[in-house]
Structures are given as C-alpha cells and as structure tokens.
Length: 253
Image 1 (cartoon, one colour):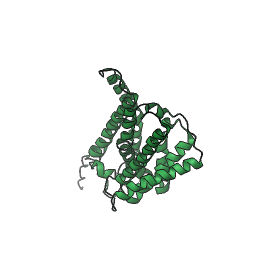
Image 2 (cartoon, helix red, strand yellow):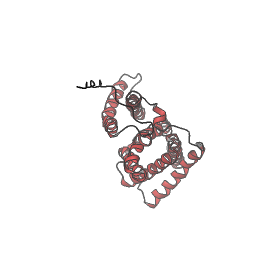
Image 3 (tube, helix red, strand yellow):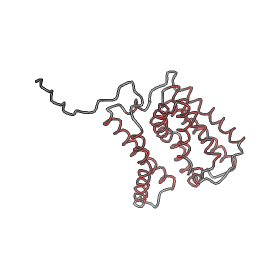
C-alpha cells in the first residue's frame, strides 16, 4: 500500500505576475473610493475644530477649505501607499506611472495652454453662462486668490492625476478598453468638480473633455507625470486669465 503525501501547509498567496498591470483590482478600487467621502468629512471636521484655536481670529475660508483638502489628500494617499507597498510589495510612484515621458515634459507643459484655449473656445460655442459659482465665494481677497491659485497649479493636479489617471484609469482601460476607460475616468473626474461649479452641465462637459485629454496623454506616454504637468499648465492658463479679468474689471486684487 503506497503512502499518501501529507497535505502541504498553506503558505502566503503567490505574488501577482510582474507582467500583469495594473496589479490591483476592483476590490481595491471600491475600498479606496469608498473611503474618499468619510476621509473628506473627517478632514473637514478636524480642520474646522483646529481653526477655532487659531490665534487672531478665524482663518480665511479659502485657507480652511484648502487645508481640509490637503489633509484629505494626505490621508487618502497614505492608505493607497500602504495598499501598494504592503499588500502588493510594489513601489508607490512607479506603480502609478510616475515616470518621465520618453520625449521629456516640455511638450506636455505646452499642451496645457493649448488645451485651455480649446476648452475656452468650446465654452464660448456652448454659450456657457457666467454664474455665481460656490468656488467664487472663496476668492474675495488677494491672499485667498493666491492660495487657491497655488493649490490649483501644484497639489491639485498632482493628487487628481495620481488618483484618476494613475490608479483609476489603468484598471478601467484593462477591463473596458482604452477608449471607454479614458471617457469613464473623465466623467468621474468631472463629478469631483461638480459642487465647485454648481453642477452646471456645460462646465462639467468641458471638464470631462479636459479629463479625456489628460487620459489620452497618460495612456499614450505611460506617464502620469506627463498628464500632471499638462494639467498644471492648463490650470495655470485659466488662473492667469482670471487675474487678467480682475485687472480689466478693476476688481480688488
């Protein structure tokens, strides 16, 4: 009678093949985006409480809002970093496509203003109305304008591109195909900005079109940094146009 080999003791799960990208799945996506709203709420509460103890009176509303966003981004990306580093044993930046594009970043920095011009023309053709946006309530003084402008061309594009084009897009593109992945990611990207623009459908359509452009750059170059640079100069162009408008109208600036 032959002996039966003892069953093997259960070991650690086999690592994902190196060629499979992205190596994360929809469970990770649901976890990260499911945590987004609670993190934003907690961050806002923390900053609101901290603002009560700031000497010299309550800080500017823009500072409070930006501090809340900064803290929320920090907490969310800390969880994403832990997921990539400890669950999958992979590097954070490289996994999200933060690499230098083959042809350098200058061309993508120049594409930002070109895209902004195209979106501006499209907005004029759509007769996008000038309306009182909730975001404009923050821009009531010079310091607030500077704070929002700096955030819009630095931390904002960096975090948004890492989340949407670095983490979200590769998974959708692998599952649904590049075109559907780019468009669907851009739609979710525009939804993020919905409250800032009072859910104006014309503004959301324009933001979606910009998101499509960022997604195309991300997939064609394999570089989230290229999309981030393009996004930053895109925002910078609109910010410069806003400052020019303030000068022309004689608004306090």
